[in-house]
Amino acid sequence: MSTNEPVSLRLIDREFLIACPPEERDGLLEAASFLDRKMRELRAHAKTPGFDRLAVLAAISITHEYLQLQKQPSNTSVNVAESDIADGLATLRRKLEAALDAQLK
Image (cartoon, rainbow, N blue to C red; front, side, top):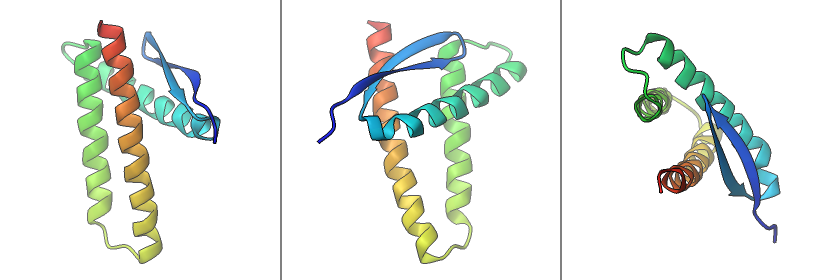
């Protein structure tokens, strides 16, 4: 059984420490990098680019893209991959929410 280790993530100008098992570290860093790029893209076009607003807009945008992908015809192996992705996204969301809660306290 692996123990959770802190991983430093940078989203725009904020740093977050999120604990995760070592085998999930690369995936977490990849997800954070994707989210950071999406937030920067949105910030370039936002009228009020507050961090919280950008995070919500990015979450909505990524979720919309994900749901559009789900609607596309796919075979069984892709459905299994989608389930894994959904589970991973749910885990990541919980970790990010915990990190954000800790930052706001």
